[in-house]
Length: 229
Image (cartoon, rainbow, N blue to C red; front, side, top):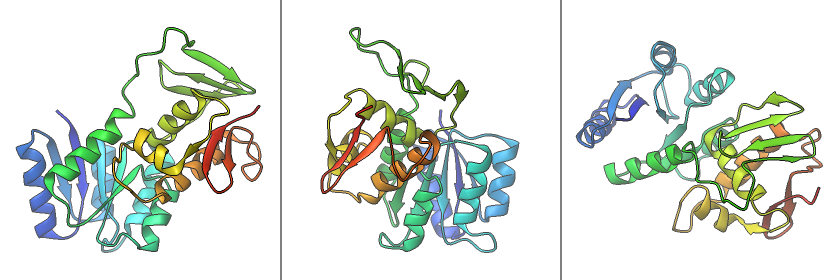
């Protein structure tokens, strides 16, 4: 059973999403403000957070920032506007995905499961070592752990999945759409802002100089690759 924390101020949306998730067997706690959400998170860590951006009092963006200061819990934004600049900022401050409202129960559950699968240990390729070192970066694929100069890095689910995927094929370039399909499991044409925002966050944590990345490099006009080192 998945424990979901829903932070949504609209009573009708909150009730509908809660009922839909509970019908699918998910334990769901729903609150109406960011302050209540932070209190609920501190009291009982959920498996995933669904966060509305337009909240009274503390905004959803501020809630996201505060969560990421202390936790890497999977977090999905709920937004009524797909072109809202707040969505971009939300991705930049740490959200793993976003859902445009209104959304069906099936879509919400599918996107939740996709985010949660990024935390599931993968079956390592027998030809590939489970723990590899690139420069001062050590990647433990089995434990889903990344260290830089011996210190653990706090990576959100989308960040570690992106790093694992790219580092499995050094020097190979992937388009943003390929990364959306492989990492975020979006089989349709989706918003590449998910990829760009995740790369920006990942570079901030793994690179000495994010403006001149050593690990996750941009291939101008196409996408990203890992290396060369």
